[in-house]
Length: 360
Image (cartoon, rainbow, N blue to C red; front, side, top):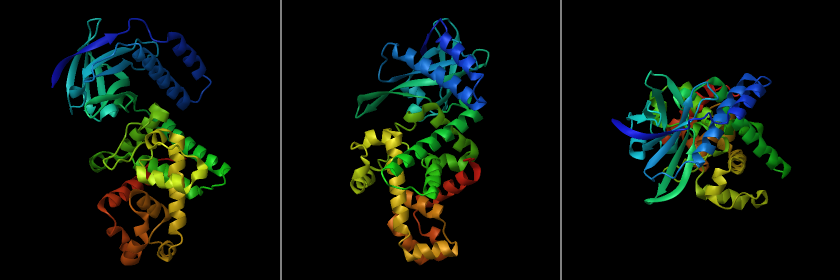
């Protein structure tokens, strides 16, 4: 599909002084941190400029783009109908206020996390920096979302590593906070949780058809680009939300079982706060493991090496952990054949993450 769309262009470079300062400071930083800082500076500039843009209709999205590898290049704004933005393989010709044309192609529609490519008339790629997306619920505007997708143009190893480091810091910080309250999270539980921060956001259909390493790298890149807002708008069909994809009832049960921790009372707010969500995740996983270790079937399976701690924790996070001892008793070494189909896929993804992702 080719359709005309509106674009707005800033004629002066955005935050030239900030970009220059960032470039100077980058000389004293590691290559990974320097690359991350440059991207984050551009995203910050784009957000400030987007906030100054006029309001758009609820059925349109605004995308900020800029020339790649040019910190002082002007940021351009492309206004695209939401229907086009969410249409697989759609292409839109965008005419800028300077008279140039850009081509936007939808690579992978996914609401605020829609991935696109943007090129000029010569085929040169521009970096999609930030989308302003009107979120509607029940036909009415709910909120304005700002998000950076892991567009192909932004795929770089430094961002992948930075995203992994963000997840590690978040989980380690949550564990340290819980330790101060007298609740110890076992290192093995923390390790599995780090894996699950990727597994939970791996699309099962894409896992079946796409390169696994690239898919996992994309998820880690999202953590680098969006930090505390990563997966802020991600809600499953079961109502699970946010970074840890926990359902409301499970969260309520954790709050009731650990009132001393002081988890956020509101579920949506609690899931959008990564530190709060990480604490809830670790509490649930540690409680699950402590409970499983009371089972003779679990002890026997671990001793016989027919199941591992990671297998059982991952399966218990995806489905009902209370059923695992019965699966082990009935199935023995073949217990995985008895678990739900979705959990079988979940364990396949976990194994691929464990094999392909460098957590060092």
